[in-house]
Length: 293
Image 1 (cartoon, rainbow, N blue to C red):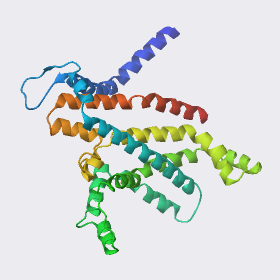
Image 2 (tube, helix red, strand yellow):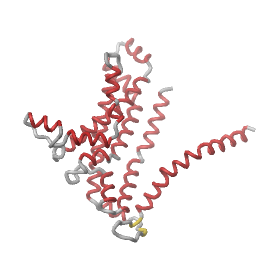
Image 3 (cartoon, rainbow, N blue to C red):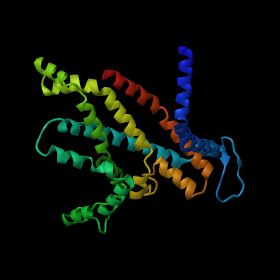
Image 4 (tube, helix red, strand yellow):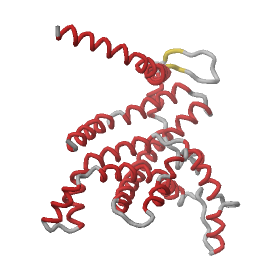
């Protein structure tokens, strides 16, 4: 009887999940299949014929200096921005994890960047930092400082700062949520034991929130590695190719140079680069869930 019930329950589960699975296949599996298939195809816009090329696109990709430069910039940019955002977001979460006047208003203002699309934020930054009409360059010129976001010496630091302004709210919100889930009894026990604020932070809060912080870091670095719109709008990958991310490299290879096969192979390499992070996220999430029980 129980075997029949379990079988019927399993069948019902598959039937109820079928619409979601079909949508997942249409939105994810099929495009991935086409991308992988294109990466093994000689598909150049200037040529009418397309044919199987085996690993030719991957071999050509290995000998593309611009790809390795874009990959190096992407990883460096993603790591520095993510580390800074996690630290700053956690610090702000600690600051807001207490009662003070105007907390609700300031908390709402902190979340404003999350509500704005990255591409729109990039357009706003582009206007604000414009050398001719921008507010910030105009103010700096009045005090005798010449600043340009497009200067080779400033562009990397400028992009990191702008990324901090946009995505620190994300790490702040997740860190604040994790802090809010901390049992109050832990703080009371630490106070009874005579622990000061620094000891509570380093020996109680951080060890307990380690899985949550790891999840925040992994989610943010995944998003940073696939950055395209904000950097493309602000610098277009320039000056030259100094700020060209892998996403911008793929876009230019496909839609400017017309080599869809090479662009698809670069996209597959990017997916393979991101894939190892997923088991770590799942593992940390399970640890976090287990710690909360």
